[in-house]
Length: 452
Ligand code: ATP
Ligand code: MG
Image (tube, rainbow, N blue to C red; front, side, top):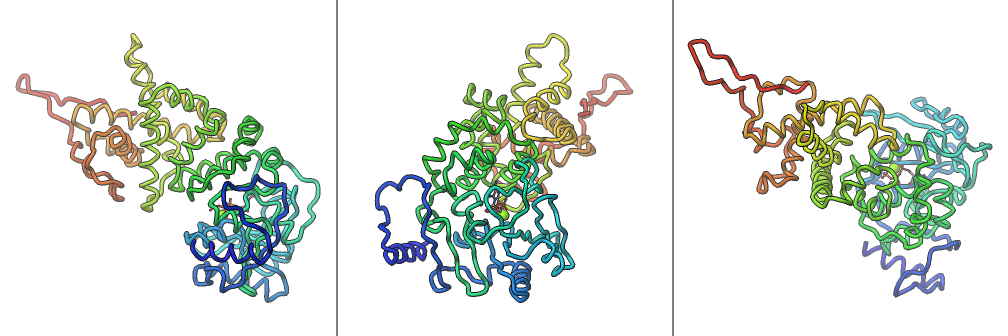
């Protein structure tokens, strides 16, 4: 980031704008000066840009259109991070784009975006510059728009969410174009919304979640104006489509920074709005809170080491401590044998009702968490029956058990994250079902109750 510090200081002195030394100036509404950084003032090289994204950019340019790399990829390249995806914005209409790329499909009904498909399921998303207020129906839940009018590059930058997500990179002259003050905020390590946070959150409350995710991911401070707006408007999240939360939450859980994101969710009152049951448990019981954050931290270590998990697994990880506590209480307090799978199912349906998790996912989670519980019980008796290996969810439940036992401190010195073949220290506990002591000439095997 040293390059940025020098560059930004130069830019601000040349613009005659004094750069604040102490605490940051309050958030806009302000319209920053447009800054254009030439190639020798920034570190983005075409070598770091996906070759297929370059192909798309050059083909658009060669046909006379404007085309820029936009959004998260420019932000990540400036932060020397590997971008997850490369998005392109252009003045070509969706139909024009479709004509130029045989491997493309148009998605969205009103505001159309184009997905250009490449090998290995890679998609380069191309959008036509649009104005603020134009919403994207391919992301369900956003307000419906009336028009399908397009905008200029500058208007397109201003309709984006965060200043650090509003930067453009041009392959025509290798410049970075900053209409929204994103470079300054990158240098100051601050997450700010483009425009007034109250207005932007009212337009689309999911921006709260995005601001928190980006802060957690790159360790930036959240602008106090966003904090205040979130405090006032966080309950608006309940008006959003659960499908959009689902999309964003999967990104959190897969992304390697779920522990910090959920910690911030708690701090900003978002856990309370989206997961009231989880919030209550984490708020009231320090041991549950500790285990909840440990489980997420362990998941992060696994995803950062390259492991990929199913959606039911991802949503099960933060549920381990509260589901385990719930089962323990039921077992202790019920007079008859509790129906544990049912208990888990009812709890999950309630706890996940606001975040668009499908019935099918909940059903898989129920199996996974029940098997995890069975194994946890067996583990506590020092013996996990190898007959469970044949269960449909065994391998994922075993990974879940690795997280549960490591989070509880059962294996303090064991290496983490486990390799793709699982958690070695735990494997020592898997044995063939024990033989029952023979009482007479024909003894029977002790059948350890297998999970459903
Ligand atoms: P990631 O690294 O998670 O992909 P990203 O910032 O690229 O982060 P995307 O969901 O890929 O996130 O969105 C691409 C871009 O679209 C963002 O950088 C931002 O400019 C814009 N964007 C996405 N969601 C919104 C929103 N709700 N409101 C305004 N702009 C948005
Ligand atoms: Mg992206």
